Length: 483
Image (cartoon, rainbow, N blue to C red; front, side):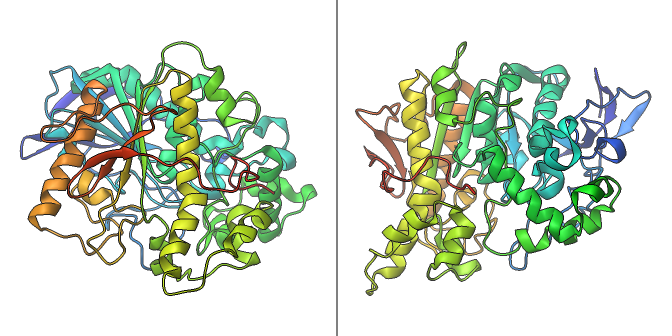
């Protein structure tokens, strides 16, 4: 099939009635003079472009035990490509834009998403690559000057350019540019959260789904520049030689970032309060100050998020070194409370609950409370399904939303599991289409507010209960990591 869009004509492919267009360039390659610079839109092309092959994934380190890329995906700094999956190129269908996770360091457009699963439900699906690691989230302004003030948000600016591409082109694929939902998991959810408080992103989407991530990981400039100093030291570059980073092969940049990004490290990369893309350095204040149309939110966490790291990275205890790696100068607050956990037969469960609270759930709750106070529609959930070895761990929702195992290799196929898959997928699909997660056979899912605190619990059976307030120490700042 050939589609004619404002960006140019494309030839895709059809698989079982679903049309796919792969490897569409939405921005200029961020190479040469554009390395670390704000994203620039791709130029329209002439002729018919073949869109049957995935574009390059962003440069990244291989992680033993975790799979983030398809076998056919190759790495290259020229990585700003997106894919479109549609059931009907002549319709006016709701649009889902998927933002992948991977700690801002790993993954690609294909990670954690099964586009046909949503396309068969009458949606157009867009999934995009964006710059990762040092190339996507390293604030280089302290070394390269004010022209690079936005470099700490390069990956985020990539996503905004992809959303602009959607706004201009998606009608040619049967999508409605006025009914766009962004959705992400883990780092993807944190990027979705950041997009909801950015003026540059206003009008590009109407709804956001945040799975295990909120706005608590946007970093202050001082923290970002401290991390850049570590990176430049590993690269062997001082300020008087900093310009060499602009021509260094990307493979060498990966080597330089390796000591910082390997292992259980969630905060060595991520968005930055750079003074241009964010006004101020308080994410919750930015939610309160927003004007104009309100973005509807569906957001939540999994009960046993950090049990994944217990198994994958063998994080069975915490010392000052790990606390500093995860929380920076908040480590003393975290360690004071960690030492209160009894070292008894229930330590594993209590430790997972403790880390989950500090890294994921507290930030989610605080954002939900603030957004609902500000007049946004907020639907809050928690996944409790634990009939598998890693329990309701990080990324386990993908088996229900996407029909994928992702990092969860022991996905079940019991009648109860299949029923929950239909319920969770159906609820999210209803939100994408109409802004309300009302699915057949499900209990009524009320909006969350600070007083009534109603939350949907996905389990067998699904039910609504009262969500607890944040259980973190009141002295713990909202920005979860700082130096």
